[in-house]
Amino acid sequence: MPLVWLGQANGMWGRKDYFVKKTIILLCMLFIIQLTACSKAREAVATGEAASGAPVGTEACELELAPEDRNQSFGALSFVETTDGYYFGCNSLVYFCPRGGDVFLPLCCKPNCEHRDRNCNAWVELSAFGYYDGALYAVSAKPDSEVFKLELIKIKMDGTDHQVVAEEKLDVPTDSSYRFYFHHGKLFVQTSTAESVICSGLPLDQREDHLIVLDLSDYSQREPFSEYIEITPTFYRDKVYGYEGRYEIETEPSKLLELDTATGEVRTLIPDVAGPSIYVSDSTLYYFEEDYSLDNGDDDTDFEEGNPGFREIDLKTGAIKDCGMPLEDIWWASYGADYIYAHSYPMDSGDYKLYILSREYELLDQITLHGDQYICGEASDRAFILDHDSQYRFRITHYIEKSKIGSGELKLIPIERFG
View 1 (tube, helix red, strand yellow):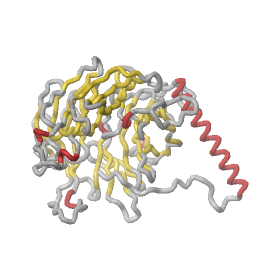
View 2 (cartoon, helix red, strand yellow):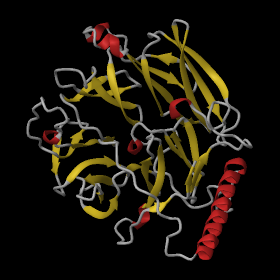
View 3 (cartoon, helix red, strand yellow):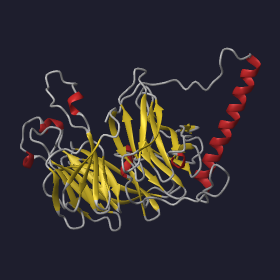
View 4 (tube, one colour):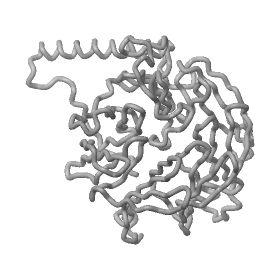
């Protein structure tokens, strides 16, 4: 899935045709409105009130997912939704937007804080955080002499009171890379061998790669899967989904695996890669098969003609259903609990069409996204749009009200401020 897009100017400030006096008045009004919105949002972080002035969580909202379970639609991004609002990890900070609000601010109410280091209440290592039992949890990992040391940090929901509740020493090389995923009361730690060791040509069984599971209830550590497995950001209840070996460097096709963290059972779903976006329900695994024949970034590589389309794997029987292509120009797709979000191929202008499909692959609505925008993930009432600046610092810039999908009134609603 492409993550690099071209930028676009905001264009909300004054035009040359306005008289100077009218421009100054307009800018002053906008400045006052922005200050008011930011003040209310900061008050929401500190006092638990929404930007509207009402207590947070008073608006009716039925969560589609328990806060402790990972939202599959957000991929590798850290996102937690509660009845109070949305917590989003970006640029090593946790941002909060109260329910019904349109401002994401760092989860920090320290006066004059610049939100640049770990002295900030919103600071988390690599933006990896999750929710468990009424608190946020973050993780910090660093080499300590010759030992890989992990710190688990418990944080109150308003960002205050950071407590190191567990320190774990992992028996992995200090030059390993790592990824963290919080889900279902557990922290999953994926460590990978340094690139220099991989390039040495060592076989898989001699690489120091691990998938470690840390239970947030008692901080116990275990490694239920002895062989190396490359996990995806897709989790469902006690199940995690991944691949056998490093599929991006293996010459043989990787196997898509289902790993049961409760029983330790591992089973193969398909003997191949399932595409970049996977979504799992009680009975079915969903994915979109891209047309890899169009991926000719390496001129020396020949790609076989693709067979793009939506697929479903019956988790009971293993049968694969080809659900076809409802629109010919779909490039890639991601899934939410209610809808499928599909990007078209880029148009001549560089913009894209965002198609919104039902879970039965019927087109319900569409909207145009600029080249630097793409779907971020789906919450209970909104779908968020992600953007980045020239330094590739990502931020949420817009959202779509899910209640408007299919009404003919769909529009991108701007986030007044992020950061």
